[in-house]
Length: 175
Length: 237
Image 1: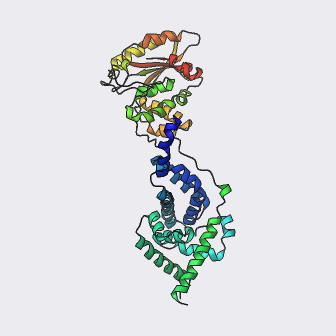
Image 2 (image 1 turned 135 degrees about the horizontal axis):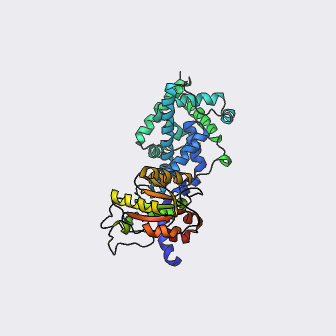
């Protein structure tokens, strides 16, 4: 029986990739991406868990191993967007906007100067903020950013250029 | 300072700040990912009323669905052992479930195609569904039950209460998906009998199980006390 199964299994393993495996292998990286997006680890972990559950419920394997990572990163990005949207609604009604990365342990690692950069980043429009984070945190190429954000490559290039310019202005770098 | 230099400086500050954020996540302290209990399970399936009643008794095979939904059927029958834990001391011991319109049970007049599956605990959808108990039948049943010397007291459980009870039990068992899949009307109405100890409960079951409009009689105390494999004998259909 096993002899029969093996030749069948191997090509399948090549063309499809297990969702659970992708998440397990990239768990830390995905949480870090979410932290970069939303600023605190507890929320970031929830976002990744939620993305995992959703992806898992939809299908157990992904057809194209090459874009599997982009696919789960997209899922995490989407989750982060929802969180930020909900927060924005809440904050508009009550508190002034808080910069991301505000837990005590993060504050120790992320000093004043970095906080300033992150605050300026968080004030950019969503698309610029996401494109800059994917480029300068994950070092993704234009094509890779485009795939994760599901926008065109030329849009990625112009968005990043505009984002950098706006960030420079906010940080007083290009007077 | 020209634009290129300014951009470089912004880029490096941004890179540095983002990297610092990334390092705040300690791999060792991450909560592990919890996989969903069942892959691809979506609670789009309706439980058939008496099916769940029987699932309460732990009798396998009562949940009936189309064969294409078999994956979900297995979830449903798997829950029977969870559901059967519902009885505790002090609650009515015997449940007499009533037929409802559309019932799949032969006891309610449903006719099933002879070759319509029926393996591994899945019943085929009936060709002709059964009919509900009439008001006259229900009142006659109640009179018979009240006349029995073994019965101490009788309560009637309507659909809403039945639904609420089963749902609560599912939630207590942590089976949220099943609880959410459950709808009012999925659990049939029943008479709940509190029995006198040391009397012949089987005589009561025998007296009413073949009456018109009776879907099933379940001795819930028996279900709670028996091993899963022996629970079928607590049920009379």
